Length: 164
View 1 (tube, rainbow, N blue to C red):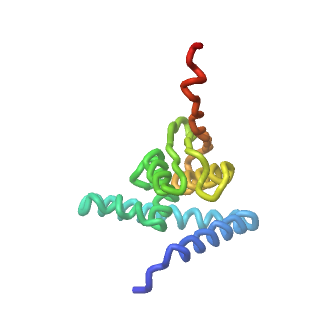
View 2 (cartoon, rainbow, N blue to C red; view 1 turned 60 degrees about the horizontal axis):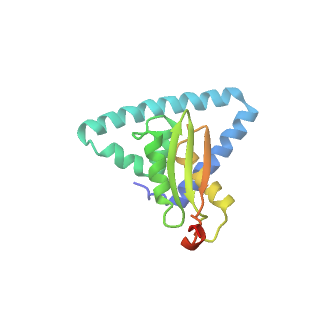
View 3 (spheres, rainbow, N blue to C red; view 1 turned 90 degrees about the horizontal axis):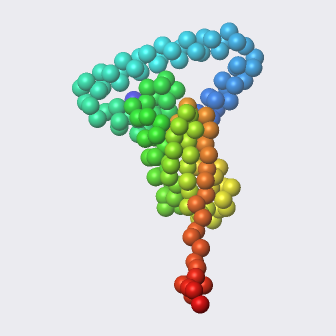
């Protein structure tokens, strides 16, 4: 058995694969059709593997989905055991304590996320981009991510509102 890839190697491989597929698509439609057929066959094999796993070890599909590489593969094949809302909520929770973000609505493929302030050391735009990237990574079926910034409540001294 070979050594397990570290997370950085997984991310590099996925990035290279995405780039290679984009290049292949631009050059040769027939080659891309072969890749799609291969992905379909592997997807069916993965689907059967998950079904067998769920029968013998009901918590195993959830554990598999928690692995970044396997979870990505499950998303590619539309086999992820969690719905988009659950995946988004979990991913946003993982941003804490650097960024407090909450999924406030998910309707018709649009995820609305409210964030409190900006990420530590960042600005509002960077925080919004972080949230959008996080959502798209865990829920590629999302069509749009709307980020709303919650403002800090203004302090109004009691003396300013009292009748004179």
